[in-house]
Length: 92
Image (cartoon, rainbow, N blue to C red):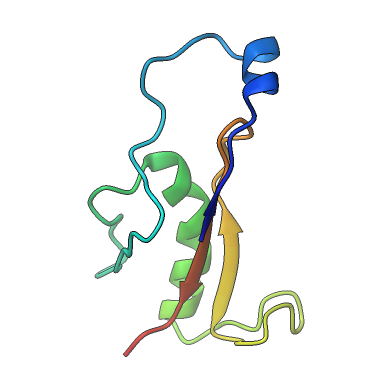
């Protein structure tokens, strides 16, 4: 849904790395059998997986009505320098 990049924080705090993220806006991932989708980084999956599992098991309505669609969640990976926001929803 959205990608950010905080170059000032990277310059001040991060050790330089060549390759951090292959994601791009507009990508869609589908989860099958609770397995991390190909192309999704481990860091993002670590954040998304508990919510995906709960939704797949019929749960939802996180945090008592947080989302307009109770079978969805708006989540971000845990990279504080390059956060990526994901909209996760149940599809048939």
